[in-house]
Length: 389
Image (tube, rainbow, N blue to C red):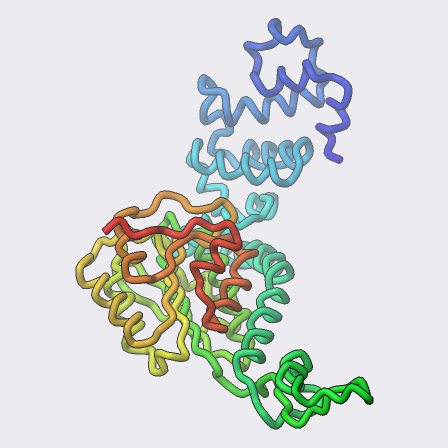
C-alpha cells in the first residue's frame, strides 16, 4: 500500500480534489490538504496543470525531488505513466542523461525504448547506469516469458518430429495406444503395442526462426519484447534463430542474441522504413524455406517500394516459408498501422494481426506444428486482418 492509499482511504473528496486540481477546491468541499498531500498535489500540478507546464524546470534537484515524490505517493504502474508523460509533455529527455536521475526512475518497457532512442547520445557516465536499468527490465521480462516460450517451442518440436524406434522416455503413449487398438486382448484387458510411436529426438536446428523487426519509433515496445524472445530462442539448440532489424537499412543482430541488453543497445530507433529491403535480406539468408518461420514485426507503413515489398512477401510464402506478420508485439494492442497493406498481406494468405507477449509462445508453437495460424488467432480472440481485394 502506497502512502497515497493510506492518506485517502476514508476521504473521497480529497481524492477528487487531487485529480481535478486546485480549481476544484471549493467544488469538492475538501478540507485543507495535509502537508503530505500538498506535496502529492504539487507533483501532479507540475506535470498536468497547463498554466504550470514545465514547472519541473531543467535543474536536477527539481526533477530528482519530483521523481522521489511520485514514487512515494503513487503505485509503480502510475509512476511509470507519469514518467512517460513527463518525458513527452515536458520534454525531459535530459533527465535520462544524468545517472543520478536515471537511478531514481521506475523502469519499464517504455523507459527502455526511450533509452534505446538515446543510446547514441548517452554520455559515458550515464551509459553504464542505463545498461543496469535496461537489464533490470530485461530480467523481469525473461523471468515472465522465458519458460513459457521454452516449453512451447520444445514441446512443439518434439511432437512435430516423430520417430518409430523411441526409447522408453520418448514414447508417445496416447498415439501408440491409438495405433494398436486392433491388438486389444480382452482376456488380458490390455493392448499389445507392436508399433511404438515416439516424440522426436532433439537434434540441432529442426526449425529456422527469423525475427525481422521494424525499428521505427512507433515499434519501440515491440522491439524490446522481440529482443528478449530472440535471446530465449537463441538459447535453444533445436532452433536456429536470426534477429534482423531495419529502418531504411538492415542490421543483422544475430551475433548479439546471447545477451539481450547488448542486442537492444545495438538498435537505433527512428528513421524511415524500408520493408522491401528487409524482406530482400531475409530472402538471401533463408536456406531452408520449408523449415523456416519468418515473423515480420511491423506496422506496414512502407517508405520503400510497396509493389516490390508485396512481391517479395509472396515469393517467400510460395517458397514454403511460414510467414507471419505481427502489427505489434505489445501489451497495449495494435497502434496505428497501414490498413491497406495489411489487407494486401492477408490477400497473400499471410496471417496479419497484433498479439501480446504472453501470446507469442503459443503463436510459435502453432507455427512450428504448421497449424492454421488464422484458426489459432481466432481461438485466442485476436482479430486477423482480412483481404478487401
